[in-house]
Length: 395
Image (spheres, helix red, strand yellow):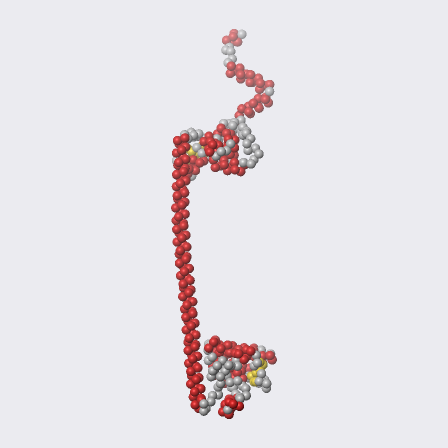
């Protein structure tokens, strides 16, 4: 009893604890719920007020949306919050209140309050300041920190904004300078390519003029040789006239005066005189000879104007090659003298028909075709083909 009298009365706090223990003993479930409610925290208390103010007052977002953007974004920065709000602005629960959350780690809240630069030790309040610091110093080693950074005063905020604007201005000036340099370089390249193209075009024009001049020179030389040949033939005709009492064995062709024109194997008119008839008969009696194939080819090759001699040589080669390459084909053993190719490219040229007769062709009775003789020598035909090929290549 004495001990109970000496015992001090319980304090108010002790009485409350005793009452609480009794309640726990009576109803453990209800107390667990109370304890659970007591450890729930408001996640918005850790948000940077300056960033929330920027989102609400300067950007115009409602407070709940601004807080949700900071809580759910990739980082607690203005850019991350805006990005999250842009993606979720049409959600049905975007404007509902933010529920309380359990603290991380089951104890006190350990969310990052700031960022520390490990290279210089500076504490940065948010990601925007971290990026600004990284751009200014080039530092890249950062870590999260639980140290709270005192919000900037209005004067400090104005200074920070000025620094950011100055940095942006500097970056813009650097970019414009680089673009200017690139523009100058592109313009130089464009002018260089233009000059190179002009040089190339000029060089091509010079080469074309040289080719044209060379072609004109060749044509003039060919015309000069043709004039000299005609003068020589005229001199020859003059001497022949003097020897034959003013008569010529040659005559005018359809294209005008052509001293070397082949003499068509037709009956001469009575008006040509006995001397011309005798000369033609003597020529026929002599007949072409295989030994004179080179001479006949040479006569045909002498026709240079317009490349007529070359065309004739090619036709003759076709006639002879058909017989040599196809000795059993009867269709190649006859040459129609009435077709257009023969009349235009073989008949007018001296030596062409003689070559065909020399290799073994004979004129039929009607005078309309040349027919290969049965006894024609294949070796003569092959030699004539080879000689014609050489003449064509050296024309």
